[in-house]
Each structure stands twice: as C-alpha cells, then as structure tokens.
Length: 347
Image (cartoon, rainbow, N blue to C red):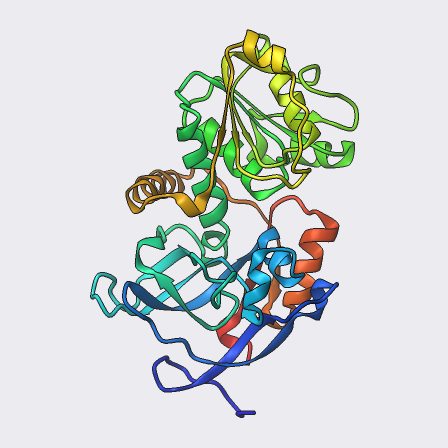
C-alpha cells in the first residue's frame, strides 16, 4: 500500500474509493480501498471529485438488488461535484468547477465516491460561484429528475403541484422547483407527523403545504389551494400512494412516475382517472437526451444563481465513513441529502 496519494492526476497513481463487492446484506460491508486512477475515454472528462451525493441507488447496487450486481466490484456514486482535470476533446477547461451525473458510473462502471472519476462530457454543468461544492453535489439526480418530470407532465405557471416524500431528494427538489417556476399551490407529503412538523418548520419550506400521511390521506390532507385538485404530481414513491394521488387529481391532471420506493404495484381508481381525463407518464433519467439535459441544467443553474432554490443537506461524511453514510440514508430516512466530502484528503 502506498504511503501517500498524488496531488494531481495522470501520473499512474492510486487513490481511495468506496467500492461495493458481491453480494452483501449490509451497506456497511462496502470497502474503502486503493484503486487505480481512471483514464478518460472518448467523450469523457476526468474530474477531481470534491463531494459526492449518496442516493438510494447506491444502496441498491451495494446490496446486489439491481442488475448492476453482475458488475461488482464497482466504485459507488452516481453524482457529485468537483474540478475538471482534463478533457481530451477540449470542451472543458482544466480547473472549471462542475457538478455532474455519472451516467453508468456507480452502477456498471466506477462512480464518484473516489478522488477522481471519469464523467460523460454531456453530463457536466458549471457550478455557479455562489454554490458550495457539497451543495452542488446534491443537485444532479434530484433536480434534473424534477425539472424534466415537470416538463413531461406539461407543467405551466399557475398550476398546482404535488410531490410525495418531501424529505427525500426528488420530492424536495420538485416542490422547490414548482414554487420557483410559478405554481399557484405546492404541496408535498411526509410519512410521519414528526417529519411533517420538521419540514413545516424549515426555512426552505415557506409557502409549501405538507400533508401528514400518518394522520390524513389524499386528497383530504390538501389545503385550500388544492380545492380543485392537483394538476401535476411527480411521484417517486409509487405503491398505494399513487392511488391516493390519482384520487386527488384535478380534471386533466397528470401523474409523472419517477420511482417506486413505496412499492412497484398500485391499484388505481380507473373510474376516477377516466372521469377526470387524467393521464400517467413514466420518466427515466437514463433516457434523457443531451439537448433535454442542457435545457434542464440551464433552468437549474439560473435558479441557483438567483437563490430561488435551496438544496437541502442533512449530513456530511468523509469517504472512510461511506458505509455509515449509506446506512444513515436508508435506515434513518433523513430530511435532505447525505453527502461525502474530503475525498481528495481521504488519504
């Protein structure tokens, strides 16, 4: 094992990374170990990672519950922030601060929980000067999903928007974006009274209704702003809650399904959907075109610069505690994102 890590890339160096091995029952079994420095291929950019977001997908990969298990061992992490080291195509200048989605990184190829990572060129966006790296690292998956799901749902200013799991990344991003983009009413939901009260007390939640699903079901828990129902719902939960959302839709309402953390099967009120002329859409971030991503990034960065959205961080862990960071995300279900920082000083 080497005594120190390099201060710059491209020297045939080794570095630390959080890697998942086949197939463990506990997220804390992932290993922080030495790996070779990655080399960018065609259409890729080498970045020095300063912060990496932790997501439920990391848990799925680490526990072998996805098709990615056949690719283990793999360095986890599908999003992050950092500094461009080299771009063989010359589109990104060295030293540029960027936030990024790793594409297949963290799933079937090595991801962002390491000092260096290679990122598809089209998946980078420059970090606004007023945004810290640890904040930028929380943006890519949640905010790209939220912006593009709202667009898929045909959102227009003045409409009413609902997104469940407001303490989670996509739910949180959706309600903040909808508010910033001119929704007339915005609501999210929390699965417990304690979490609902905590969100209501948070400064970033001003003007956002919070439905306490421990006490109420939809649509009963929605306030006066939703008297005529929900126009657009971005649903990352699925399961039984999707049926409740369908019952809360306005005439012409749209549900955009972006996940199934609450279950992959929903028994929908078909009569209500037909009567309200409602529609359901499926969304996958993996299917987004580069042109769609560029437009979404532009919206997100403009709102960050203006201070109209506020990505929420629950906690920050060092790379050596990546297993604990993942356990905290899955078991403690915090409000806001979990982030890994100090990757360049993990040695």
